[in-house]
Length: 36
Image (cartoon, rainbow, N blue to C red; front, side, top):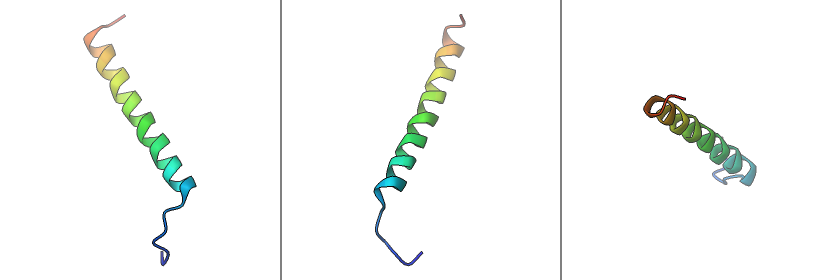
């Protein structure tokens, strides 16, 4: 880990992963408040 450069691909993957987790949490909250 000598390079301090942030690679666009890694950043994109991290953002997508974060969005996925955020969506999962939001879905769980919606399901808990409004059970369909």
